[in-house]
Length: 424
Ligand code: AMP
Ligand code: GLY
View (cartoon, protein in one colour):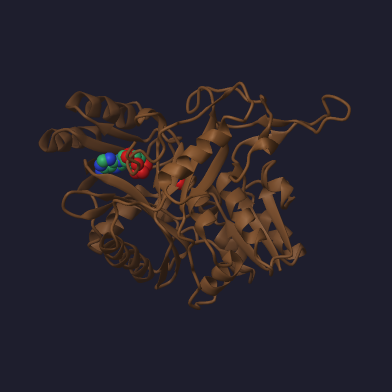
């Protein structure tokens, strides 16, 4: 079988590694891929949103299954185009992916179908928004509804912070002319619940927790994620059952009722508050970096799983009972300004860990005769290293020991991933 993976990060590298283990997969193609994916797949130089070229490639190469990583491909309608041409693709349509691309769509859906989430209102007008914030008081959360390069969510601790964020979003139009969702502040443990969904069929994966802040102690700016681990000792089986029935299944059913049945990964960014588990956000795709810690725990054949879910069959999803923990190595300065092009040495010295490349590239030339072509940093998040262990502490020790062998002058990483679950 020939599989096509769309995307270019650590998530897609982990998906490719997992698919490669399937005896049924003869060949993996990936677009646009990265230097790590290039070691196991044939790279195709087509951008993630170039749906027509992606389609042509899949048709011309008799691709049996396409898997999509990033949200931008979904929002560009890659699933719509592939399905219209009779191709098998594990990804939601553009309309179904609105659960991620439009916060207003997601919040309205949750309200209509009584899916537990923070109380909210949507505003296009600054004065109305300020009045609502005055009524509700701080802390309060403001979410710009549109693309904002990760800066669109402000958890305001004071009224003044909320006011200045609303000024940026609705008066100065810092991100564009989108609306703002103003919502209740929720306090509790956040976790990521990814389910494989096709219509009303919802199959849960193991839970993971991401770490969004740049530095140890959950300090610094919000990032795309600096590390993750799985399983989560503070979420019980009862909690998971509650979330599966009352959030994930209900949402899959709600999307059918709205005429945009979902196929792909429905990702619940959930929070366990004192009273109940609630939704912070939905994504319409695999989480990054959650995927890089969840897939190494999978014992079953991922290719079979994707096919079974698409074909409406019951997939066989089995897990090993190990704990998985992974750490991002990011370019110094990320998520703000950072430089690229620093050489990464000694990756071949790492033992007994998974190395997923996030933002890397192979240098275009041989630096010295007889030496391999160097691997260079090429993004904010550069590498993701995952270890398995009998417990999370052991997995973390292994990851940090192996990371110390990497020689690159421009990387930093967190040392406290899993701190919510590991008693030091
Ligand atoms: P989002 O882009 O919606 O995932 O928000 C980014 C981060 O902001 C989340 O991971 C939370 O840490 C925080 N956040 C978002 N909404 C809320 C909320 N209602 N209450 C508390 N924290 C929130
Ligand atoms: N790790 C959070 C996300 O994938 O959006």
